[in-house]
Length: 318
Image: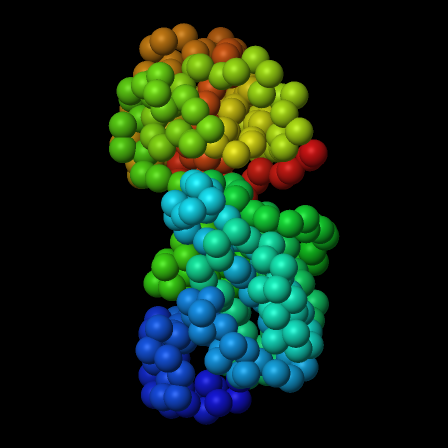
């Protein structure tokens, strides 16, 4: 890691998001610097993992991700997935075990989050960041997470640091070609219910659907999520390809002016069809009367709040 740090020191202003190539590493290995924090993101195709791991041979706290990108291979269609991890010693040993017994089918990309200096990412912050990435990724819905994770309660100062880092990493991961914190797809036609052929385990790309299998809650891989924020209360169930808001969810009746037009239209259509109805005589709260399939938990939060929520209010309960 010292080689990488020395190679980029002083090359680029700290406040710029920059994608660099370091002499001595393959051209496909990139180092991305954050704009306003001291994070580095090192990205490499898995075939060059060995070269990169030589830079991480010591005792240092790091967070990493091993991802595929939904490719079709000889073993069939592979859903996009990512395995996160954190370690405070010998990433090379950990990664070689992963590659010998891959936790991610057809993994294509390894990315490593490190500090610009070795003391930036403490062991406590590394493991907290791993948990935060694992919590936020399924909310966005673009990638499924692989493996099991703990979600500890964080102190307020730690949460503030992580919030800053996550916003930085959102852009850095896009630049790296691994947009794990982005929504699954743009909601380009929200006012139009999904066509029947979209109601499948491949995921709903836009709009909404009222077609939900009655046995969805009985699936062994189903997850249950809850959102509780003032007048907005909701439960959702998720499993690969499915995000379904449950009846009884409440939504703010008035969307903010800056709300995305597509989401505003979706709310209007749902209200006109009687799927979202006023809950009280004042009309300040709407209630969902039927199960509603949406593209992702982030999309569901934006629908309920009437704003550009990033979905962090969701908490997994089972």
